[in-house]
Every structure is written in C-alpha cells, then in structure tokens.
Picture 1 (cartoon, rainbow, N blue to C red):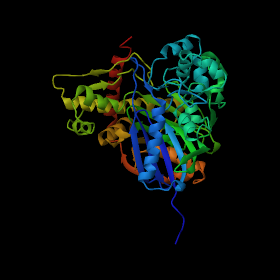
Picture 2: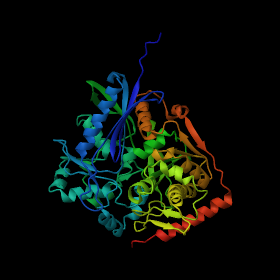
Picture 3: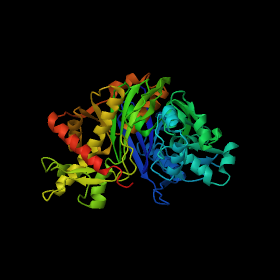
Picture 4: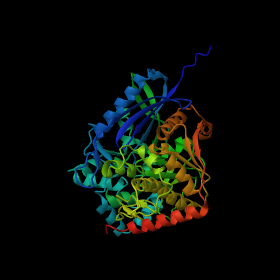
Amino acid sequence: MSTTREKYLLALDQGTTSSRAILFDTRQNIIGVAQREFRQLFPQNGWVEHDPMEIWQTQRAVMEQVVSEAMVDPSDIAAIGITNQRETTILWDRQTGKPIYNAIVWQCRRTADIVEKLVADGLSPHIKAVTGLVPDAYFSATKIKWILDRVPGARDRARRGEILFGTVDTWLLWNLTGGAVHATDVTNASRTMLYDIHKLSWDDTLLRALDIPREILPEVRSGSEIYGYASLGGVNVPVAGIAGDQQAALFGQGCFDAGEAKNTYGTGCFLLMNTGDRPFESKNGLVTTIASAAGGHVTYALEGSVFVGGAVIQWLRDELRIITDAREAETLALKVPDNGGVYLVPAFTGLGAPHWDMYARGAIVGITRATTREHIVRAAQESIAYQVADLLSAMEADTGIQIDALRADGGASRDRFLMQFEADIINKPVRRPVIRETTALGAAYLAGLGVGLWSSPGELKSLWRMDAQFTPALLENERGRLLSDWHRAVSRSLGWAK
C-alpha cells in the first residue's frame, strides 16, 4: 500500500471585486473554493479605488478558510500561486506596511491628463516600442506619478527607499512573506507601462518622464520559482507562482505554443494569443505583452481588450430591467430565429481594441416597429461575439498566423447560445474546458512548476480536458453580411461624445 500523501496547490485569485482562494489537487480537481467581496470606492466621477488593507485581509481570510473547510493539512500544500487584477497600483510605507493612499484601480481614468502630456511630449512611439502598450490611463505608470504628486513628501521619501510600489501581486507577496520579499513577475511588470519587454528591465526614459524613483520598484522575476514563504497554520509554504489574471488564464488553458489563443468572457473580454518567443508589434490596435517566463523561457502574446462583454447582460438586467437573471438572456436569444436586423454596440465607456475610441458611446440601430425584447437581448449577446471576432481578425492580420480554434473561459462561457454564435461568426471551433477556473488553474500550474511537481509546461498539456466544442454552422455569405452590418453599426457609435 502506498504511503505517499496527496499534495495540493493553493491559488490566490485576487480580482477586481472579490478575493478568492481555490485549492487544487495535482490532477487539477478543485478541492475547495472560498470567496469574499470587498468595497468598490468611487470618490469622484471616473475615479475607482480599493482599500489595500481590505484586499489583503479578504485574501488572507479566504486562504485560511479554504484550507480549513477542505480539512487539508498545510504541510500537504506544495505551493501557493498568485494571480491578480492587473495594473491596479499600490504604494506603501516600507517600515509600517501601511498604504500611503488607496489602491488606484485599473478602471480609473483620473490620470488621462498625464497620458495626454506624455503623448504631447512625443513619447508614444517610445512607449509602444519598449513596453508594447499604447499610452493610456489603464496602466500603472501614470497612477504611480499621480500618488507621488499628491501625497505630501511621498516622492522624497520614495527616493530614500522608504516607499514601495507594487501591483496587487507584489502587495500580496510582501504581506504573505511578512515584508521579506518585494518582487513581481514579468507579466505584471509588462502591464505597468514602465517595463522594457525586450530587455526585460525597467525603462529609464519613462521613469525620468514621470519622475518615478527607481528605488520604489520591485525586483522582476520569472512567474514560476520560489519567491519566498508564507506562514499557513504554522507551516512555511512556498509562494512559487505569479501571473497577471489574463496571462494566468492563457497558461491555465494550456496555450503554450505560438498561435494558440483563449478568450475570457467576463465583465469585459480579454483575448490573448501566444506568439512564442517573438513579440509582434501590432498595427491593428492590440497591445504586446509577456505571456509567461516559466522555466526561464520568455514567451510573448498579443492582447485585445473589450471593455464591455458580459457587462452588457448585466446592463439589460440592472438598468433596462428587461431580464431578471443573466441566464435568462440565453433563453430569450433562442426565441427568435435571428436578430431582426438589430445591432447593439455596447460602447458605454468608449471602445477598446482595435478601435481605442474613448469618445465612442453605446448605440442600438436597426430598430423597427417589429423589434421585440428578444431581438434586443439577442443583439446584446451577439455584440459580445462580434467584438471578440474583431480582435481575432486583428491578431491574425498582425501575425499572419491563422488560429485553429479558440479556447473559451469566464462566467459567460456557460452560455451555449453565445458560444455557438461565437463559433459561427469567427468560423472556427470554440472549445470550452472542464475546468473553467482557468485563471486560478494557471496560477496553480505555475506554482507547481516552481516547486518541481512538473518538469515543463509541455507536461501539463495532457491535463487540459474539454467540456464542449462549438462547431461553426453559418453559411459564409450570411456570416459576411452580419459582420458588415455590425461594422456599420460600430461606425455610428465612434466619436459620439467628442
């Protein structure tokens, strides 16, 4: 009889609205899940903040809760992996561990004027060439400057090494290790708009332009190695994996080879394609980012962001009140044979890739006297798929790589109508995995690799299991007509608020 004890991997999934902890065994079975929401702070119109202490306290609480409820001995946890909301910016006092200001969330637009000055100063080409990103308030760099500019004495203290900066992964790691480790991984560093994704180092030109002292920056390490140790139930457990949420999902989906892509259908949509060891510069409004550095081998990705994905269904429920539950959208969409000529462009806060039009606004076009609630709901569902199709077309144009199939995850991937329509409109199979918690799974995979449970990402390929495949069944001329009408609808929304 074997006396080998089961080993587990603990994924800390720190998101925009909640902190979660998921416990996996080494066969990727979910053993336990714990989750706690935390407050969203809106001090002014367009500003979004979190309390960093609340982020840490809820994450620590769910970590302890999931281990306790699963009745797992902490000594059987092989490693902890962290995945996190990206770009969100925290600065704190090195000695006290207290934040000097609330976390400025990735959604916050308060630093648009700082971005405009960077553009006016001619730094756009440098930012794109070095960081792979487009100048935008979305990323961390201008948020750091804003805090240093506004908190009295912060910049001088930062130069003396008294203040530390981190994205959420760094903040959690610092607290988990009792302040022993101030580090991040390459994927999170690549989202700060300060990191040279080619030289793999912080960029002095951008640090000077924003007057950000180098002393505050974390050490950048690979996403799969032992960073330090967290005390859990009196046991020191290695923290051995870190990745930003979308890169973690790409990893959790087993997209380890160039040309493999996943889309996460959440509040927004995030489409990432692995481009291997080559960073492609987008000509079509996408951003270049680091996919992972597991095993010391850096791989790159193209990324496209849709600001409003599943959020359009929440809008139907909470603002229009034409559905009472998000799951009702699938049922209503199937009650009509087509969209009745109705197109809904959910540009509620502008349009992301490939348009990057902050002045675009939402539009519903093609309404007639015969338009029903079902048509509007179906148009909302279809809008999610159309936006992803536009990103996919941009990626294929940038790289010359034809994607064989799209892997899907996120909450809205449960919607069979949406998945089938996505397959139809991109004319490629859409594959949904058995384990849809791919963000947490990616963090677990990275942690497992970091402590040697697996020898290479290739060994993880066989663990990916498919729940369902949606095969395209739309005639090409009909597909072309739908896309053409969608693009006409988008053109009506562009620049509306200018």
